[in-house]
Image (cartoon, rainbow, N blue to C red):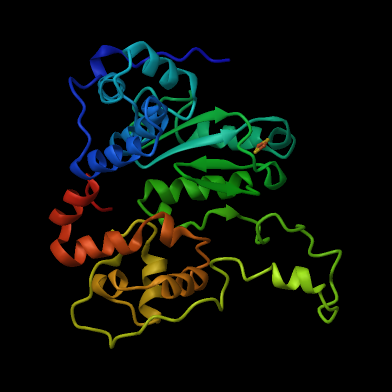
Length: 315
Ligand code: FES
């Protein structure tokens, strides 16, 4: 059990404020709880504060406590108990959480930690010289069947070798972390057997009616949805890399299907998002990263509007 304390005063900002968009999200979130139970919103609010500023500051904890009308000590207890809250500044481009619990350790997590020490900092929770990268060892992340694995922000990278982690860290440092597809890095589908199927291998075997009915295509599988309308390559293309999840590779893929403008993406309906998600093998990332909302803001008012809506600059 680690001792978790707030960062020293020297790095604590004097005040915290939610961006306008986050403030209205927080209000709506608090309203979801039954009367008298609003303090239960402390975890989502602290998490949103962390997403906004990169870590949980003392000022943020006190601000959230004030919003929920709870004593500071209660909010402080939550922030210091749960290890998903970062109590001091972490890398601005990536904070690598390496699972070191038994299944991951047996499958090579010590090599992953060695890479973090070599490439980032010898000590956990310390950033590299540029302040862009940091790492820590965490307990089981619930992906043991794909061990060893790391989390970077909300994404898991699994079935990792030391060399692959080194490459992933380099890509995040280069600002191209979004070009790495989360999930297994050894080519297998989710947690399917690494050596291929050993059962249910006969394609012609009829599935029981109940099973066939209950097994629609998983979201994001290729073939699902409708391909969005393409446009001729314009003279002036939008910089699609401003959307989170889009690096140069993904941008090239989007161009290959005739997507060049934010306004195109802003207009995608559910079936079009599903098709592109499958095409990019994104496993739901288009929804998670709110591409439509991001593209809509950028199409309507550029970076200024994006900052107004999301409380931060686009990539
Ligand atoms: S032991 Fe690493 S994810 Fe469970």
